[in-house]
Length: 174
Image (cartoon, rainbow, N blue to C red; front, side, top):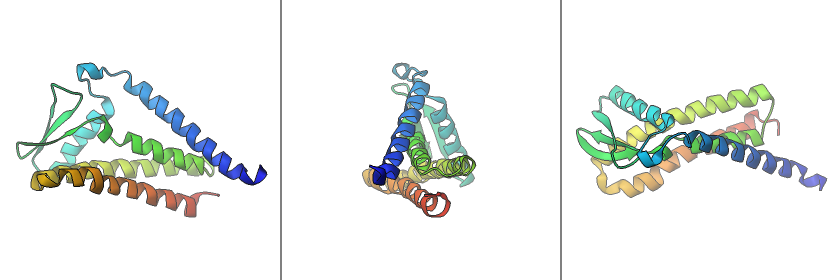
């Protein structure tokens, strides 16, 4: 049993932190009435930041609150191209990233710093990913499924993998 102790500790820390963080996020979301199309604060923040960053690139992007769901409709050059929902805010990716880093934790300070820097990096990439997705959908609407289901998840999860590998090989004590 002693030979499996590092693996069991990893599994316990990973799932323990993932479950705790997920429950905390679900508790946060429960404060919003999705039946009344209420949008959570994090998704609101992501949506407004998408508009701000798109304007940095001289793109004409606007968001309009949907009347039929908890979402923002995204207009590019006054044309509807997408919607931003709770799942677009990157929190689920950040919870997964954080849980893995905790599972391979090093010192408290180093682990916390890496989680903050990595989460910020992922958050910013997610904003830019949404901006690029909006631009791509406007110009290549026939590629929506490929872009949404394959290309853009590869970007965010690819960065998560790179950050995990950097943590394991450069910063973790394990």
